[in-house]
Length: 178
Image (cartoon, rainbow, N blue to C red; front, top):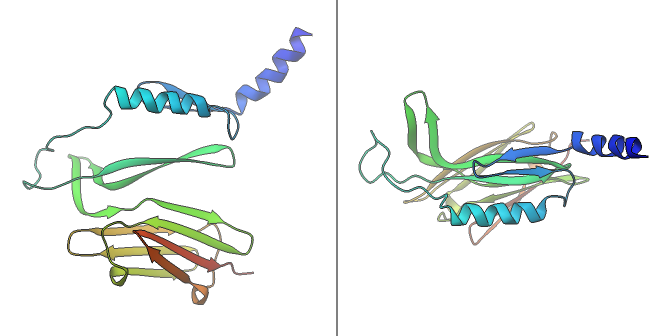
């Protein structure tokens, strides 16, 4: 009886994906499994002061950097993407003028929905270009510049592009090619 239980649990353990945040690991075994651990880990990260402030050597005085991580679950597996304007190079971290926005891509039945966070820019400063299964978003205003190249889950019809922009959130809808 115990052997059957061990075999059952072994299969569950193989499906787990673990992410180490430096102050603790979190394991994702299913869509909602580990949610309580994620909340506990977020509280610990907040308490232990994950935010880092200071100057990065070799940069012009007054250069401002933004860096963050977006974690979401796709088909039961977490996808971690960075955003911001700090890049790691062979010589160390570099603050670039152009930021990478937070972007979510949703593969719907007949279309692809892309949502991008572009705070601080006007709608007139946003350019969206589509080529095959690649979407390019660029945006600029006097204080902020964004750029992101997104690989879409399938080819789309560029002429079907519909977009709306409100309160710093850009929504793009594209029909899939059949």
